[in-house]
Length: 150
Image (tube, rainbow, N blue to C red; front, side, top):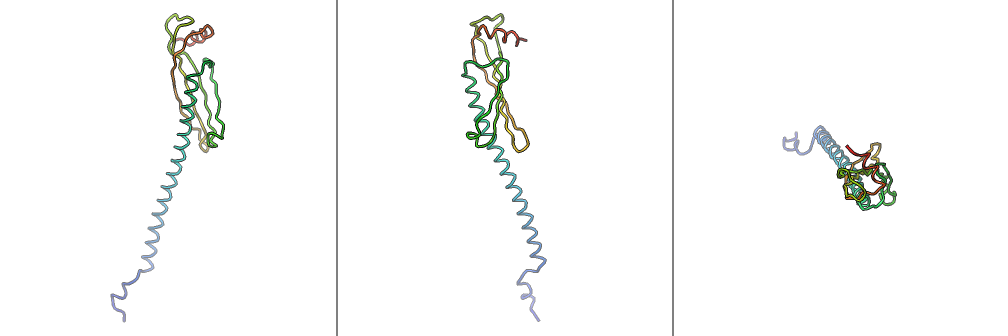
């Protein structure tokens, strides 16, 4: 006959199965958390990339001399510089603040609204940047300024 001390040396089959089940649940939860973290990191990487390109485009628009007024214009970046992610932009330039009864040569503020968008799987992601720049009224700008009044 075996002594009680000898019977307690090993694990029973039930204890091994319960321990295996607990480990399986823990590993499944851990893998799910890692997967979610990787998707979030990829989404943030895409967003950061789009923000960098958006800021670059806004800088270009702020210093560009001839832009169409009150008419949206758009473009895209080459996939080779965006890391394969197609990123698009659309901008609109409009008068923001003009002095009353302003004529050619008068200073005024222009508002630049820039929308950046890209596709993340089947979802469209986007954000908008806004900028302002000082400009001087030209005769061809008069119609745009008068048409954008309050």
